[in-house]
Image (cartoon, rainbow, N blue to C red; front, side, top):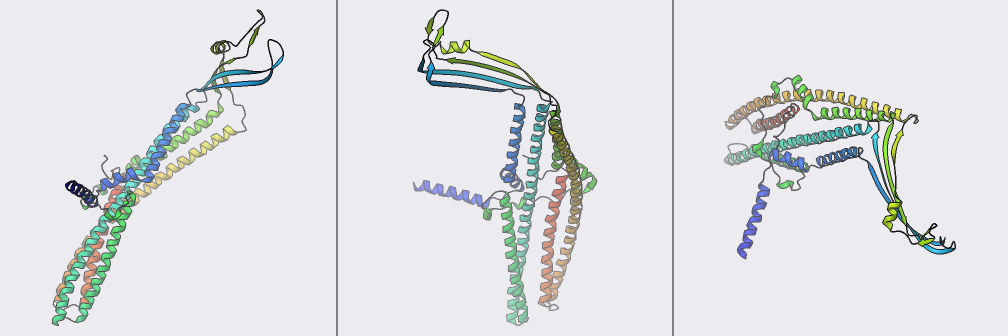
Amino acid sequence: MKSVQIVFILFFASLTTFAQGKKWTLKECINHAIQNNISIKQSELDNQNASITKKDAIGNFLPNINASGSHSWNIGLNQNITTGLLENQTTQFTSANLNANVDIYRGLQNQNQLRKANLTLIASQYQLTKMQEDVALNVANAYLQILFNKENLKVQKEQQSLDKKQLQRITELVEAGNVPKGDLLDVQATLASDNQRVIVAENALLLSKLSLAQLLQIEDFQNFDVSEEDMPTMFSTILTESSDAIIAKAKENRTELKIANTNIDIAKKDVSIAKGAYLPTLSGFYGFNTRASNTNSFDFQTGIISGPKPIFDQFDINKGQNFGLSLNIPIFNGFAARNNVARAKIALERTQLAKSQQELDIERNVFTAYTDTKAAKESHEAALQIVKARELAMQYAKDRYEIGMMNIFDFNQAQNAYVAAQSEVLRTKYDYIFRIKILEFYFGIPLIEKQ
């Protein structure tokens, strides 16, 4: 029994270790967010609602069929059909009705309603895609922020480690009387600043993990981590394309414009539906009814009083049918139809203006993304040059300090400048990567390969 318990303990311990040790890739993060994000789930519900609306439009072509029935009791003083006298008696009466009607012609409104419903379903699917794209971009940005904070923390810890070694060395030199005690105090102050920067970097990393975990709907953000090996590459050929080419591609592929075009088509169908009220409508109808009662009947030819006939025989004898066509020609309705058409035309014009604005927004956004990407590339290249110069300057300062030609304050300044240059290299690197992804996204290149 103990061996079984040990096996279970080891099994669950291994699961806990796996859960804590799992590092999410960018693809896993995006796929998980798309499946669990609340906004996407709401958009999926909108899509389901559009599907139901389409079923409503299909139902307009089908007949309406209704059945009704009633059974009543008449209890009290009634005339006896045999004696002609008033007597207390109970009479039961049963009736059944079946009615059906169907639209034959309604100014093509039903057809246009169905076409509109199909377009609305397409628009909701586009909206879902747009929501997924926005979430994917947000996840990618948060993912890269974690990678940046991780590398920045490594830089700060590496500098902290170097300053700890320097503190130990300066302490030995001060004790030997080779350097003044003021140098030791400066190094201690520098190390305290290093500790502060490490704490800030650790806090920034934790907050960035929290941000991504919230996007993924993950509660245990403290054990949440991402894989450094899945970092998107900096190398891309997107900048070999001209801004005009990327704008043209974006206008072909961007979901925003697909939504805008679909909304225009929907608005056109609304105009057609409103105009349908000008035309006559034709519908067909059919009705069936029957009845039965249990009242005694008197046959005047034979003079025989008989009880009620069998109920099904009565239903057969008393059945009746009616059917026909109904034509409705609109003549004047207080300008209601005309006003509805005018409103639909205004709505159409609004959607057309919205599309024009969407095109302008895409042009501006793509051009801004293009120039920002080029600027980010140049900034990163400049940061690489600066960090090389700062590294040489720090080495030069270190050599001068070790031979007593520079004080500890100036040496620390050179060292801090080098650390700042390293952080700037990291910042520009991840800024450049994210801007590349945005520009590729506009060009139609997905953030991740679809499953």
